[in-house]
Image 1 (tube, rainbow, N blue to C red):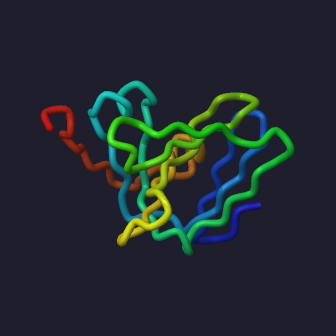
Image 2 (image 1 turned 30 degrees about the vertical axis):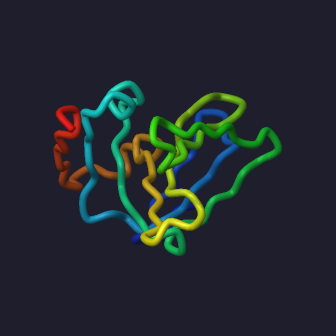
Image 3 (image 1 turned 120 degrees about the horizontal axis):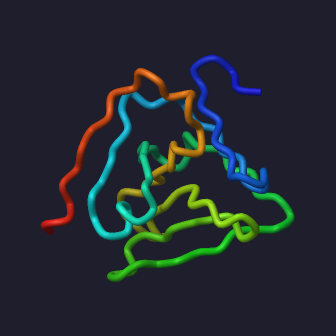
Length: 117
């Protein structure tokens, strides 16, 4: 059950459940991987997020320069989030809020043009 002011994200099979505060905005990025994932990102410090992983576990993938790690459910394949790697001086977790829709109705969407970088 979601409490007021909290967002709950679940993968399709229910193996992953993530809770975090409702974001002030979400971001659509057009870089190669975000476009392919069709993700709608909300950004948090790791302490703001609670992650529960079921028996099936998760699968991890580090893209390109290995600065971030994408996480998906090992059973159903839903991409739930990405995070900076240990030792990063500014740790971040980005939640794929598509796993929470329609709970985000009315939250502004920011377009990030990262394809040209």
